[in-house]
Image 1 (cartoon, rainbow, N blue to C red):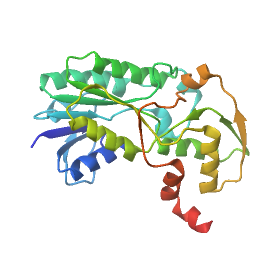
Image 2: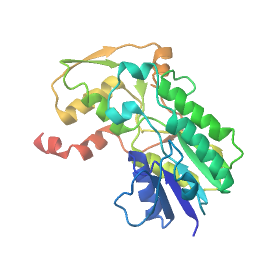
Image 3: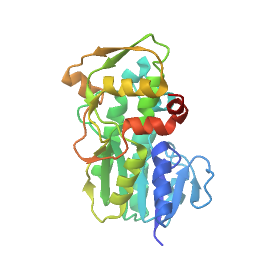
Image 4: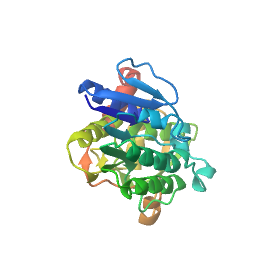
Length: 270
């Protein structure tokens, strides 16, 4: 049976991708710094940032799904001033470069790279790092695919929870359509094995709402009594922050339904 390697397989998106691959009866190897709890996959221990263990992880692999990334904002669940000046590139650029090179040596038949919607207009350092990594894949001689996804619901949840201490929430009125990782994983797995290559349809959530509406739904689910102060941004500033609406495939799970799934105790109390 063909072997699929998933990098970033212990992250939010990666776990959903691995679950779907196993569910579909595929043989899966996960490249991670330490083994996880799943016993129905192979674990290849290493580090994409340094390349340690990567050559061994690619042995006998037919398809690579690169879901690895290093976003300080996502990890901490909030933005700090440093995020406007620099972002680490060891995973997304140097790691991707090594992955592309060694995948070529291993004669991998397909490398699917997960990227982000709106990178061409975005100005944040993390977006520039992601764009550099994506360009490495697209310029390679590999048989490759690239899927751009909108920001994930769990990140929006973390960012809004970080405002909980403020009596007034300054929130942009810019529309965008974040998405659940489960919907992205469905799209990624489909594209990994349908025989098509190149830049694939990007994916976002089912609703085009402004951030104020997302924040109000969050407050309805979590019940923090806070006033929302709508902030108007120019199109250029909004795009620079990655606040765009995707034009491709749409996920199915709404933000309200995601909140109800993750905070059922609040719904019961209501």
